Image (cartoon, rainbow, N blue to C red):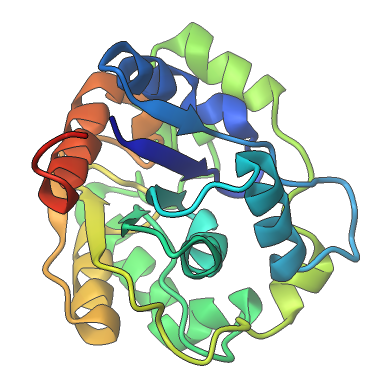
Length: 233
């Protein structure tokens, strides 16, 4: 049995993982998918990591997964828990001292998104969330996700530099969603190579893969857990 610690992205709650969590638990694994604090403009990335560590209540090890903005929090959690593996899922990959506000410019996100929008006729970066984020998510589920949106992260978390001095000494995998209309797939593949020296794995899905392809995503995550502990114990 593996333990998975799932860190949600901006605007989300732990609910965004509920289908993946069900699939993982159905295969006998333990899952934590806490809500990170929202609606509080003074909280920092360290506060978000604190909330995850508190939720797992003394756990050490496990597979930490960060989605989207959760990529800024998940490595901090992985270091604190001495995680067995870290998975960056359609995630922002930070550099030491870099704030989330700086990340967009430093990584060249804007130019990459504009170039992809030219290729796909404006689907990437669309102002319609059903087009940009939820295009392969069943409509009722997408509507429920949008109903649950809230103010996270805070202004303070966006402005402060990423607190780690280096990437944690934890085996790291990157998963790119090949139909992502928020983070262009080629952009994330390049970022994984340049910042982590990692060749990304892929899943055919939108940015909100945890809602659109939960079973397939759970299978990928279980595969990573088996790599860490082939015995499955």
